[in-house]
Length: 290
Ligand SMILES: Nc1nc2c(ncn2[C@@H]2O[C@H](COP(=O)(O)OP(=O)(O)OP(=O)(O)O)[C@@H](O)[C@H]2O)c(=O)[nH]1
Ligand SMILES: [Mg+2]
Image (tube, rainbow, N blue to C red; front, side):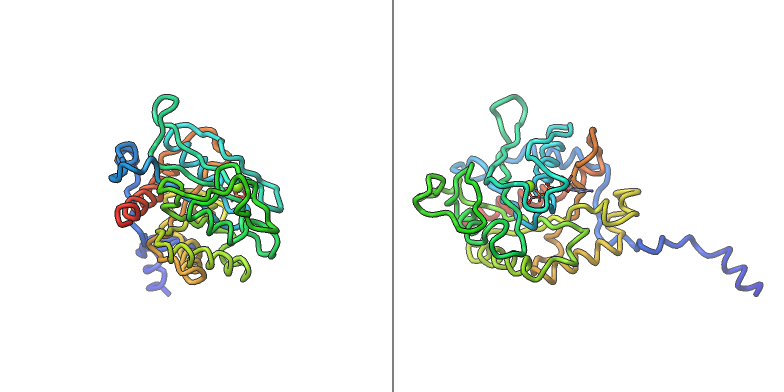
């Protein structure tokens, strides 16, 4: 009994039940280094005006919020350009729209842009159609196209781009999934997302995934975002995403989007920049290997 009591006193504090040893290292407090990289980035290929980054994923997963979050990090203030929605049962984003990010004064932009699309839904005639996402990847859809969940864009549509150039083509495909739902992604949604992924593979487009809402999914991360790579729960969600879609674990990035904050935060920024850096590297490699 005495020995047990003694061992209780000398035992080291153990991590809380839901946390474990850090399983991915991230340099917290080094945000300026990442910002410097992003602001200094110029595509090697001078025919490329900007990398085109296409976001896809289930309705409500945080695609539009991720675009706003990247914009917020780079502007140094919380911005809300791509409309996000809290209560919509169906995809809130209906239009195919590309967001450039302003760099310095008006009229100058970073050499990458995000294309936001309608969310994927499990029902056959709901949400973005896989055929449309494939056409978007090869640059056939022009900005402003209104997605029609029932039929794909026709070649006669004035938003159909018959002769896409390098700049219309997608250079990086990013799958956006919520950490609160990845284990219950329906089989139908997974099938649609996998089809998109295989089409991108055939076109050689690099692919990454963003796991959003990590604050909502894990109380320890909500208390301190720096627990992200110690969370057993998030590790499990990432492994599930890896198995469901086949995206390698080192291409999956957990982030917390800005959604209620009115000011930016260095740790939230660090995670977003860590994902953004990898997106930029991947797009650059793709264009250089074409
Ligand atoms: N807690 C939390 N909420 C988030 C996060 N990202 C997005 N949200 C919220 O989730 C809801 C849906 O986000 P959207 O960005 O509209 O999602 P979406 O993928 O663009 O959705 P559709 O356009 O409908 O396909 C909004 O209420 C956001 O504020 C996050 O990281 N954490
Ligand atoms: Mg949206």
